[in-house]
Amino acid sequence: MSSRERILGRVRRALADVPPGEDVPVERDYLREHGERTVEETVDLLAENLADYRAVVHRTDTGSLPGVVAELLSARGASTVLVPPGLDEGWLAAAEVTRVPDEAGSTPHELDQVDSVLTACAVAIAETGTIVLDGSPDQGRRRISLVPDHHICVVRVPDQVVASVPQALERLDPARPLTWISGPSATSDIELDRVEGVHGPRTLEVVLVR
View: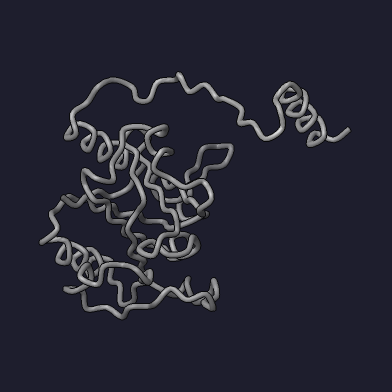
């Protein structure tokens, strides 16, 4: 018997007394968040944990966002930026770069030639320093946030910030292609030598926008 068959067998035995078509109640009595925080404290915790994962955190307001994005792209020396179809065009209003649309026909090699990618997010989790993309029009397909080496992600504060993973799951559709990002892509070998950029962008910049 394979591992798959053993696991499915356990599931079937556990559901043996449940009438067909009836939902199985799931107890969710775990902690929804660790401690009580104000909205400002939750946002500060998000920024702290993002930085702990070596993401670069910036804070600004809606009116200054185009200028901040332009500065980040200029500092990177980016001449091209990958743009999801539903991204707010105003975010790039001050940037002098070539906009590359997210197209289904783009090859991984073509995406790798783009200097940066700019996206929104679905939700950001303070306790884990995680931003989640769900493939919405302002975030694009999953691969555009994985292939380019520089990712700028805009988080609307406080609307898109939650304290914990359980709170984030309530906002997310499990049927969508969810990408959970905690800092720039990194891995390490048995000697703990850290290498960044293996599974995604080497540089992640998160802009917290009020």
